[in-house]
Every structure is written in C-alpha cells, then in structure tokens.
Image 1 (cartoon, rainbow, N blue to C red):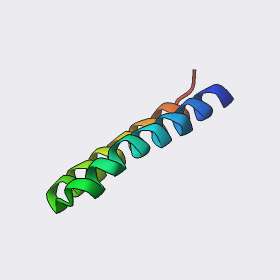
Image 2: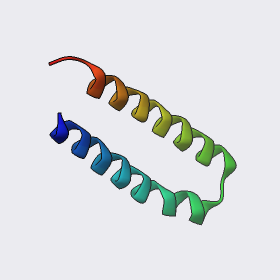
Image 3: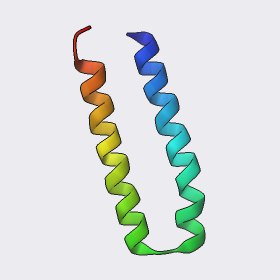
Image 4: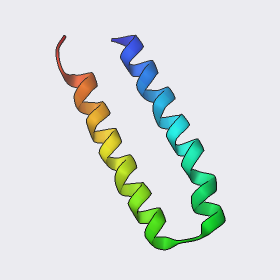
Length: 54
C-alpha cells in the first residue's frame, strides 16, 4: 500500500510539473480547463486504485 501511495504522489507531481509551464506559456483558458479536468480525472482514478483491495 505505501508503494501505491508513493507512486500516486510522484505521478501527480510529474504530470502537474510537466503541464504547468505549457499552460502558463500559452495562456489559453480552454487549455487550462481541459488540463484541469484531465488532472481531476487522473486523481479520481488514482483514488479508486488506492482504495480498492488487493
């Protein structure tokens, strides 16, 4: 279980770190919204993966 949590935190940090400069440089509101929805979906999936029993 701790490995899953660590992997989830690392993946979230990497995705946000990778996509944030793109959003800040392009300054497109639509792009920021799409990326925010994608990150929210990723977090929901990670939460379900961590909560499921092995």
